[in-house]
Length: 212
Ligand SMILES: C[S@@+](CC[C@H](N)C(=O)[O-])C[C@H]1O[C@@H](n2cnc3c(N)ncnc32)[C@H](O)[C@@H]1O
Image 1 (tube, rainbow, N blue to C red):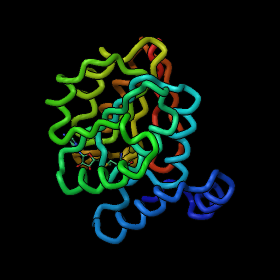
Image 2: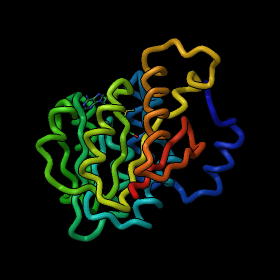
Image 3: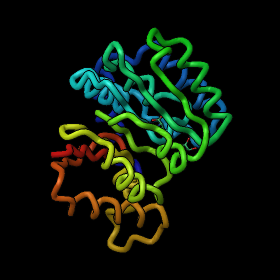
């Protein structure tokens, strides 16, 4: 189910900052070759992530689920001058496309792309995160949350994507494996008194979680 009316999405695109050229090219290439191109954040969500990052000017950003690099390229736009963005992708083909586009960005030297299973790689990363974007396998969300919140600074922000899971969590009975995992994640986040959180109805739903 498309959560946002096509007219509203088109209106939001028209009156938001335009997609940078690299992002439009990445989006076009992904749509041409990838059967799951819908996973890419896209114009409005990409600008949303960029603005949040520019407000925060984070020193350390972690992204779980690079895909072809769209959201990482947006998040890095707000990174502090000496900052680092770490992004994790388990699939080689997608990581290769991401790398090609990262190499076109002015702050490419600040991006570290890790290829492998995020659940293993996260343990090897030492920074205290300012900003985290969670966008990998939905069945892993609860485990990623537990792992990452330990290393998120107070006042740091975790953003998780697909919290409506294409509208499946809105159904009276939630049957799919991924939708059930997202429902469990949403309940876990809602019950965590150590955070402030808000669900934002951008695209397939984002939750912004601020560590108190
Ligand atoms: C929804 S896509 C990410 C989209 C991307 N953040 C964007 O906005 O363009 C999810 C990605 O997570 C990757 N992924 C899934 N499970 C993973 C895991 N355990 N470790 C690392 N990457 C994983 C998938 O291969 C896929 O490319």
